[in-house]
Image (tube, rainbow, N blue to C red):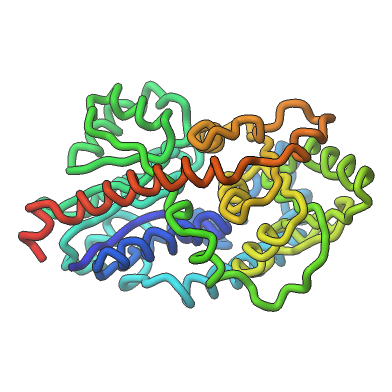
Length: 376
């Protein structure tokens, strides 16, 4: 039976492609023929990224500064495109041509799937998406098809007032709804969807052993402190330096930007996705502000702390609460004892298994409904 899913697989970051793969794998394990719709909005292309660069800083309103920034950042855009396109080509089952709008979807896609799924990641986060993206609500799917979501994320504690009614309308076509964060459950219930279910991010449905299949096999074992500082938070660098001085360990920094070579430590410039997994799996300590760096630190049972960003941090807080390790959300930035305190991963694993069962039961229930099986 055919399922087509849509997500942010073209966002060119590690979490986006890994969660896409994970949901594909789990649906296939349930016996389904799964393809990912190649939604590739202009803002994710190198051209779109360069066009949006001027909005990042007031300095970049100056054409000279803007041109210099483009020259500086372009090699990093090329590197990201190479790394993530390779991973997608290797592992993700894309369907048909890429499209940027609802209109293109209607022209290019063949709607021969039985069901359509909005997958995980921040698909319904209007801050991240720069507004409501109707395509991510499967607005282009014809009537009569079974439509559901799996662990879709709003990423905000509340919807902007001017988005409430439009979001409510877009959700009407969903027969089944699941979201990733407890804040998302609250928001959707306020919109009248009392049937919403909270499910794990797809990456957490795979075991450590399952993820080992995708880990780089050529890494050389050594000790290091790993940082993944998406939001350029100086507190992460200071914390890593303090830990480095205390234990005489080198700092390795994962970054998409080659110019981060100026940061203290060794630059891991946009490594392959397989290498990204290796770096987390083998780190002595992980310090990050990333949801998926947090996820894989948990999966590979590493000592870690997470510094939550100011925006869209509910997904990290929700996960740590769910697993009973809220203390890993760092609040005292001079206290290295937090990361040095062993995490009871036996207890975490028990909590995680219980949530995995709930999430898989949701997927089994949705894909075995009368409407679904009738249209096989």
